[in-house]
Amino acid sequence: MELATILLFVLAALSSLFMAWVIGAGSSGATPFAPAVGANAIGTMRAAFLVGILGFAGAVTQGASVSEAVGEDLVVGISLPVTGVIVVLLIGAGLMAIGISTGYPIATAFTVTGAVIGVGFALGGDPAWGKYLEIASMWILTPFVGGGLAYAIARVLPRPDVPERISVPLLAGVVGIVVANLEFVFLEDVGGTLAAVGAAILPLGDVAVAVVSIGAGTIAALFVRWDVGRDETGGLRRFLLVLGGLVAFSAGASQVGLAVGPLFPLIDDISVVSPLAVLLGGGFGILVGSWTGAPRMIKAVSQEYASLGPRRSIATLVPSFLIAQTAVLLGVPISFNEIIVSAVIGAGIAVGGTGGFSPRKLGITVLAWIGSFVLAFGLGYGAMAVVRL
Image (tube, rainbow, N blue to C red):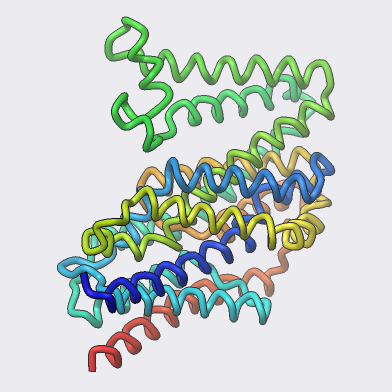
C-alpha cells in the first residue's frame, strides 16, 4: 500500500473525527436532553454526560445503516476515492463551522448529502433516483408527520377526560414496542432485534415476535402507569428522561453516518481498517464533542424549551424518537434540527403557541436548510472538477 494513500486516509479520518466532534457538540448533542433540562428533570452537566455515552452507544450499535447509505448508496457506478472523501468532509466541516460562527442553522444531513452527490457527479457517477426519492420523501414528510404527532400528543396529555395515568402509559407502551424491534449490529446472528431474541426462546412460531413486542410494550406501560400513579410530577419527569436517552441514542445512530459514511468506500482499500473501527472512531468523536461542547449548547437550547414543561416536552420527544429510528431503519440521512423543530412547533400550536419559532425565523431556517444542500452540491461538484483537472 502506498504511503501517500495512507496519509490521505489519515487526513480524511481526521476530517471525519472533526465532523463527529461538531455533531456531538452541536444540535445533535444538545437537543435530546434540552427539553428535560428545560423542565428541570436533569442538570446540564449530567445531561451532557449521558448524551455522550448514549450517542456513542447508538453510533456503534446502529450507525452502520446510515453510514453505508451515505458512503455507497447516493451515487451509482463509482466509488469515492480518497481525494473525493476529503473534499466531501472538508466541505461539510467547513459549512458547519461557518454555521456555528455565524449563527445560521446549517444542517449536517443536507450539507454532507449534497457534497457527496456533487462530488460523485463530478467523478462521472449516475443518479441513484430510488434513494433520492426515499430521502426527499423523508425530508419533506418529517415536518408534517413529526409536527402532527407532537400536536396530537400535546392535545391529549392535558385533557381532563383522558387521565395521564392512561395517556402517558399508552405512549410508553408504543415506545416499548418500538424499542423491542430496534435493529442492532451485535444481534444480527439472532434476528437483529430484542424481540427476535425473545421469540427464539418462545415456541410460538410466526407470532412469537409480535407476542414479545406486545409484551415489552405492556411491561413499559404498566411500569410507567405505576410510577405516574404514585408520583405524577416525578413520574412524568422520569419518563421524559427515558425519552431523552432514547433520542440521544438515536441521534448517535443517525448522525454518525454523516461523519464516517464517506469513509466507508475506502475500507476495502485500507484493509487494516474495519467498519466497526470507523464507527468506534465516529462514536468517540461524538462522545468527546458531547462532553466538551454540548453543555453550553444544552444550557442555551434548554432555555428555549423551559416554557414547554414535561408534558409538551414528552409530546416533542416521542415523535422525534420514532422518526429518528425510522430514518436509521431505512438508512436515510436526516437532520435532527428538522425533527426537533417540527415537533416543537407542533406541540406549541396545540396549546396556542409556536414553540418559540416565529414565521420569519422558521422561514429563514428552512431557506438555510435548502441553501445548505444546494451550496454543498455546487461546492462538491466544482471542487472535485478542479481536483480532477
